[in-house]
Length: 511
Image 1 (cartoon, rainbow, N blue to C red):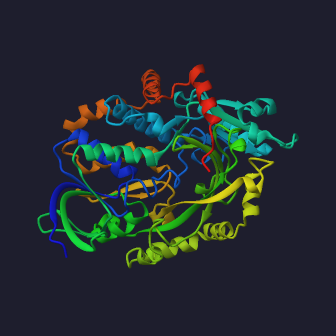
Image 2 (cartoon, rainbow, N blue to C red):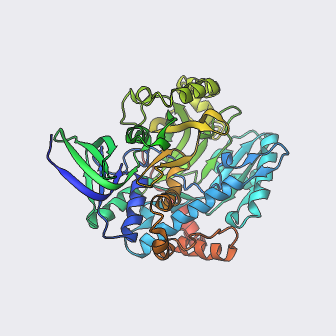
Image 3 (spheres, one colour):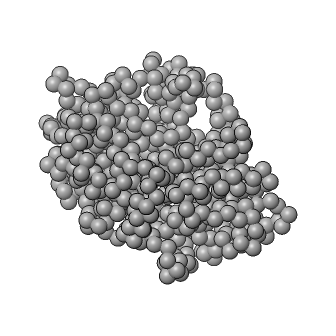
């Protein structure tokens, strides 16, 4: 047992994009607060935030069809798309503030302009996409979106997808040039580099094994130093649990009533990555399709240009896999040990209700490379097996809880669970995740530090000019913010910039 003990204002568990964002916000708002971070791996951004463990899409609902549901009357509900787009705008503003104030450098190292497209096949899906386009293109948040069913136009937009495609097939696509590819791993590392320069106490290879309330209202963490094999004790006034899939276990150990009756179901992701630079050079967009009937929302297929380590790559997926681990680096017992007396009925109810998901996962796990290639050929008709390799992406733990929809309801979004007194908060869930980190962490601040929000508001508005304002209802402010963030982050889509990104597209692929 180590005699190391510390007392601090804030403890952040997990060195991913969420802790990085919350830590950076708090350091700007109250520089004098002491912040301590514990991460069980050897560096920041290695689990869910790592560039190979997520799709790298700046989720703004520009192309993701699962954010726009078709209602029974045939109309398209765009309310979720509006919410997600507004949330992503907050991230863009905050990142711009960081660049403008030299807190991070070279935005091109973590964000690149990239068209976002939706692509569908079949008359019914074409009709849906057209209705979706009409609903979104009238909204200021989605200005600049184009729609086409013309094969010649689609050959300009997506030449690789159109090669050797059957001419009698009903197809359509939407395209918007203001999309982005975001390297959340690189951004996470940049933010922690900045925080280290501000003297936060950053501890790698430290695993939090227990968390409990002390008699004086503080939180005491039992932390194992993995290098030395010693156990340390650290106390704080506020704790944020941002440990990805590992957050559920720590939330349960905290004992707060808000964490009862909550479980998690892990789903792993597998992508196909192109190893042929000639193929990669022919595609320059994120192209999202429509999930098959009966498939869960996280299964939406997409063909993505990615920029990783300043090199271009091309990924297709995701295919689902199953492992009982809650983290890629987790334990095979994670799922079993997460089942407690208070969530047993919730988990059993979910098991009974989600037979379709279970069947889907079994089918996905059993897929051969040829079967995966057959799905890829719906996007690239002439795809060759030798040009593609498999890469295992990150683990995502979908939240299971009791809701108005019934006991044991599977949730597919991101949510925060916090104690009534605001002294502890945990982030659970998956998509849209990292893209909305700033919105989610502002919500944590409002929930957990309500007595400070009024005095912090001027600084929050300096960092996020649209804070508290609906951009959809203020198109002039939206245009102004769009222009400024695009300039600051190097995303301005001028003709010169278009030529530059096209040239970038021809750079060597990352194999």
